[in-house]
Image 1 (tube, rainbow, N blue to C red):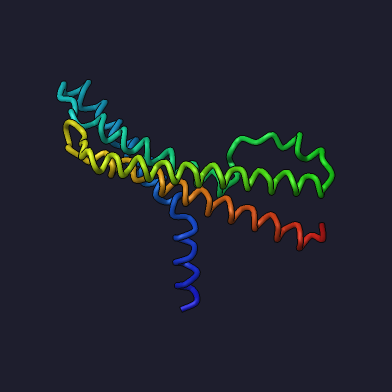
Image 2 (spheres, one colour):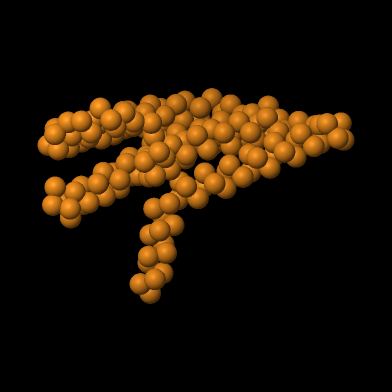
Length: 165
């Protein structure tokens, strides 16, 4: 039972990484097959661009959350690392707060955008996929980014405490 809970937590914690990997694979597959169909069989997929747009959008937002979790976002650590330990902690916590405030603002605005798109009922021209479904990833991505950044921040705090810093 305990192993099952650990597995469920691991999947939940890495949900954005898993989904980004699957969507990235779909994007590569659709693009590869599209090139094959266009240049070898002279029969391009007319729906290819819409699938690629959706995959790229979802991959970008889920991948950003995954980058928070793996600490892969661009940072200027050399500048912050030159500060004394207390100042460095304050700067890192300030960066965490500012990032979370921006992500909450983006979450709020993306929900407004989704409501507007749902009211208009706009759909893609070929597959007729509702645009609000495509852009649902905006608030989801913002929530996952806040969760991932919080996990990383707590991990750093615990590591410092365990190392006696």
